[in-house]
Image (tube, rainbow, N blue to C red; front, side, top):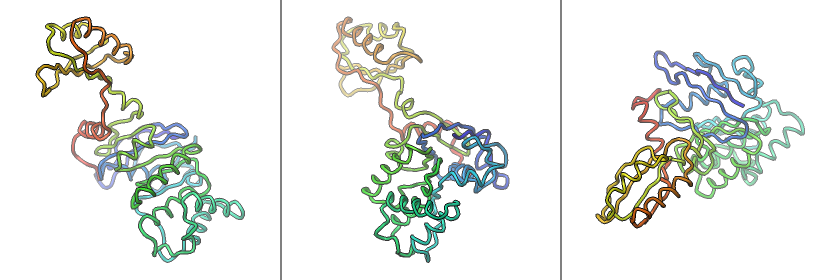
Length: 316
């Protein structure tokens, strides 16, 4: 669906985005993460055709963005962080105008507007001026214009901004529904949103891509946490000789009768098989097994590690 190669954008002498490459398949929800100034918004603006890259290429739906920007823009929906809505217009007038810009006409336009209004639950405020709406309702108007015409690609910058918890849950359900027929790029600072929605994450740091991984791979830390009695000599040496274990790290514990170890597994090792062999080795050595479980890493921790791996400087 999307192929990006060495995408770069300079503002003056500063590289806001530097040699970024990735590919996204159809109907994926991809989280685009990074600190403020990491280059996320610049990437989204380039993919939407709003900004031209200084160098590099992007293909969307098989079309070269540089040569087919207008055609691609008809196929995508874009929700910027700062909503480009006109406060003096009513919701009805604004959506009619946005649909016209997307090339929708006649009955097709009316169907698209009705669908967007229903999906974002704006029917009760349809004739209200946008300037009189709360931040949450303005956000819904922005999403409504983004999904007009059932786009193949949705680029959403902070879609949960200004929404209360109930509205946020409705927004998540809507994004899941839309992903059944569209590819979604979602930029957000809310890690729970990424955890709940995304199939994959891209992390930008200082304008460079520091992490590109599926959520499944991120959750699989390749480590087991072992807790057992500390009354058997040589248990650690027994574990070190096991072929599935790459390394062992001793962890601090408040109970000096327990041995707590973090076991790193070799790449390609089946977690269940390794756990079975390790538990058997502990019991056969005469130790009491208290706990053996996969290490669960928080997304916040993974994000911090990815950002730290490329240093602390932030792009503009």
